[in-house]
Image 1 (cartoon, helix red, strand yellow):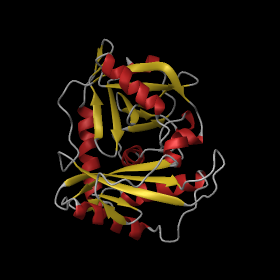
Image 2: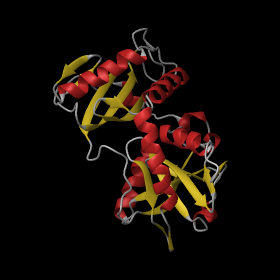
Image 3: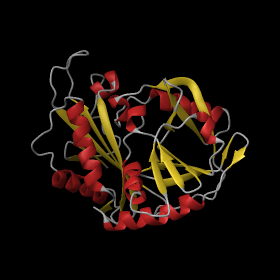
Image 4: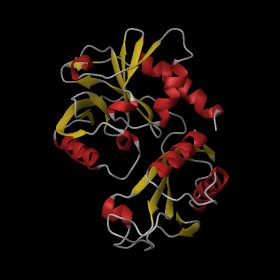
Length: 282
């Protein structure tokens, strides 16, 4: 079952048409959220990011679109899919309503909520080999729009195809100044000794929820030094560890980039702290 504007519909229901602005122009935003046994991980952060992104895109936020209302809609969708006791991936998609060409006829919005079962209740470290490469065919633009979780993800699509065709598990994206920005599906962290580095939003990386949480965790830890600064491709092979973060996986260590193989001790340490934060944070 899916939730369209507060109404539960069968998965194969036809409720969108060719005039949908998300389809026509990518005039749409989305949030990917982990829910475990009806507890929404980092819900306040997801909600506030969605509201801020809607304001940036000049979407009209309905008066009913409160944190409590959307939480109830998420849980109703989970219940309709019999996933109340499971780990669930929720996707909320918000798009501007039909009408207009580039200039919309209205800034009013609609939303869709989807639920899909996940395999694990907690964030876990994958034991598999995880190899990445740079994707250099196209570049991420620096600036505010690149930080939004919008439906304009064609670079990520092409990068994913490139990774599959060449036997990689993921690719790292570059911006226009040839700095490493992020992975195809999450933010990038680099570990060198006790220094942990991640990319600033000004470079064009996604304003990720787990990125934000790890920054908050690291700022309180005395055994690590956090650095928010640009990452050049030359730094990758000098690092002790590289890992990717997103709201569904948590932390994904990179085991290999070109001829360099990486450890995952810091990633494991931080994953435990992230799991603890997820359990005790709304």
